[in-house]
Length: 174
Image (cartoon, rainbow, N blue to C red; front, side, top):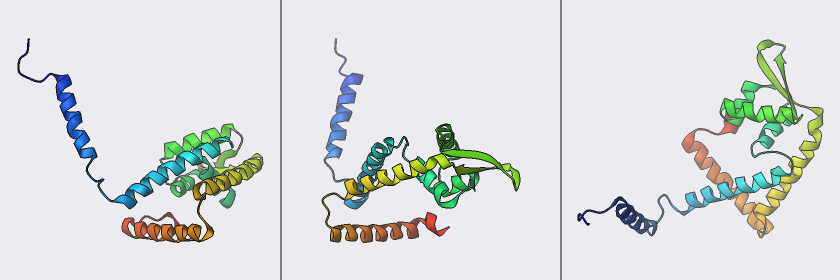
């Protein structure tokens, strides 16, 4: 028996048809913002694949690079430098500590603080990370000649500068 009213399933189909009409409309924001978003997502996926060979998850190589560059640092400094949630950094450190790449110890200057440092065993990881990032760089820039690569770096630096000024949130300027 029909009541003359649409069923929930019919309502859903009508809503889907309406949303498909919106899909044909131009994307909001502009082509550059969408391209940057897509490229950033794909770059992170590609980074995950090359880092997997080194036994790392994306982001862990940045944490390790900070330690290799700076030596022992307080965990709070690491959290600030990486601009990640403290719980995320703690989980990263737990994994890296379990694999023997980092060591945590009390700060002798302030026993409440924790120092984090790369272990001697992480030297092999350093080499693997450099190789992984080299492969990622080549994958990312495949098909671009040297002039195009230079232009891309120059243009991305301009985009970064624009966003830094707009957001007043550039890590290198703190």
